[in-house]
Amino acid sequence: MCMNHNSVAITVTSGKGGVGKTTTVASVGLGLAQLGYKVCLVDTDIGLRKLDLMLGLENRIVYDIVDVIEGVSKLRQSLVRHKEYPDLALLPAAQTRYKEEVSPSQIKQVVDELRQEFDYILIDSPAGIEGGFRNAIAPADRAILVVNPEIPSVRDSDRVIGLLESANLTKIDLVVNRVQPGMVRDGDMLSVERVQSHLAINLLGVVPEDKRIIRSSNTGEPVILDSKSLAGKAFSNIARRLTGEEVPFLDLESPTLINRIKRLFHIA
Amino acid sequence: MFGREKEEPTATKADDRLALVLSYQRSDIDERKIKLFQERLVQLCDEFGYDVVGQITVIPQSKERTTIINASIPVKLKEPI
Image 1: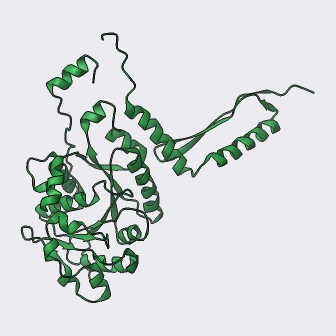
Image 2 (image 1 turned 90 degrees about the vertical axis):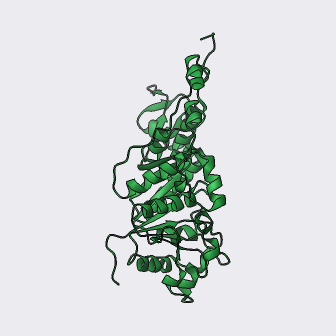
Image 3 (image 1 turned 180 degrees about the vertical axis):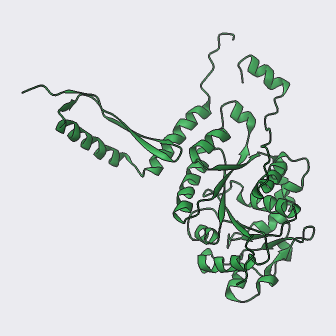
């Protein structure tokens, strides 16, 4: 098989559900496409697909990854191209099948075929550490761990790091999502530094909590396209860092006059 | 200021709790294992000529991705018979 040797397969995972894996895949994938790379997003959450909704491509799906594996369709037929960014493609998950119906080696085979065309293959992992997770990590060259700054999320992520390492996947980067600087400042949320210190992996990005993300998932336009969104800017920076560019982290601290006065009187 | 004591931030407590939670998970340790560990430490002290004179505490702690098991054993030398 003729492989694109520069092709990189990255699994985005977390352990715990609802931390922002799919949001990260959609926005970082789009960010890489904006930078001129050929990108394929693979949804491995068979039975509970979401990535199509995040990208606004749900009405254009004809075939899915299970169809490819079962030989019902060819890989090219199953890819859904983004209208605005044709270098961005989605390989959707099946919505009416089960994760157990495919194996890690079958997913790996599909991703190996995608390597011929795409520079980056981002694999959206389902929550949990069962079969779906094993499917998602099988083809990966590296992993991105999405974590929220709260104990349940960090504990699950710590477990996932152990599982990734035992699968010989040692290039693992951290994205801390849904950070609320005000809560960190008030001592009500774990800081990014503490989360990174506990997990002891490379920090790839810090994404602030942003109401615009809810809007974007409802409209099917990834938040990276929202020029007013700080989270969108953070995802854009993550995409650039993935390509090797050195990008400083966003300053999420924007002290208001009220906050300054509160701190002066030790009431915040 | 204004005589108010500033409360300890919640996140500091959460950080300590997280350290403990992670160290338990990483070392696959539970209360039963800690109890067995404590019993063996009493035996070990006995072999080396010490009496354990108080509560032994065994606390796993995490630093980076390494777990450190801290044992606090109050002892005194055995009285010569």
